[in-house]
Amino acid sequence: MKRLVINSYAKLNLYLEVLNQRKDGYHNITTLFERIDLADKIILRSRPDKIIKISSNSKQIPNDQSNLAYRAARILQESLHLEKGVEIRIIKKIPVGSGMGGGSSNAASTLLGLNKLWKLNLSRAQLANFAQKLGSDVPFFIYNCPFALGQARGEKVKPVRSLNQIKFWHLLIVPRIFVSTPKIYREWDKAHKEQKAPLTSVKSNVKLLILSLKKKDLSGVEMGLFNGLEEATTRLYPDLVRIKEELRHSGLEAVLMSGSGPAVFAISGSRKEAESVYAKLKNQKFAQLFLTRTR
Ligand code: C5P
Image 1 (cartoon, rainbow, N blue to C red):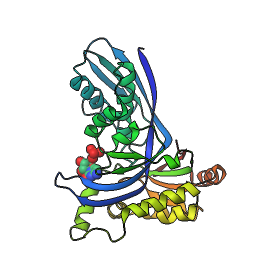
Image 2: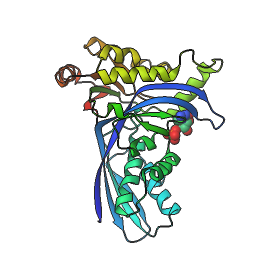
Image 3: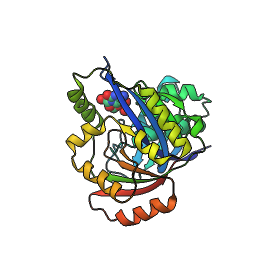
């Protein structure tokens, strides 16, 4: 095999509770990931020498050693002492710095793709171990599942098999601004310096949400959706409040920001409903709109 083309999917966080800041500066979180069919394309071409080359159609991502996909190839090469190289081409569709894990997904796709292209025979656990060194959101994309719980930094992943057959439609509104995740966590720290552990049991909240998702009970889902970073991101980008309101006014009630933002999504059980709201809101100047589905 010389060449491989892979879809590199985006994620949404249907639940994201920040528990505390850790000694290493990261935060312990509980999150529920959902994979969606909005995707970049990754094209891998093997090289007989040790060179890793990276290119993309986007000016917003670095085409050098700092790119997470480049680092994914590098970590395999170095750890396994490989004498092989690769050309990585990224065709971007997932908005950059939007809270939908595009860079993390590209890194995971590169790990999964090189496992085949370079015939490494690494297990999922071994790939997940490399993935967590690249970033907190990377392991989720290794697991090939539509829904999963993430704990610790987000890198401890447990697929939620009870939701394997469930599919939702989503309308995404992605404001044309780049949000830096560390900046949002710093803003969260400022507000939570004095706060003790949350009063309600986090796990039971996620479990309730999972139950509502399973039953496709959208009012239950609406009550269960939660993102503890929303307050911090909204403080820096107050326009997000208006965007959420706009989605709600258009008839979609279950609305939340994903990750550290600024992507905001609505959940619908019906394609027709999601399509009609998409048609109504589609011509936005300051944001991109997408109609996507659970993948
Ligand atoms: O793990 P990743 O490199 O994607 O994280 C980017 C940044 O986001 C980290 O450097 C850290 O500032 C912040 N972060 C955090 N706690 C997490 C995940 C990310 O503080 N659980």
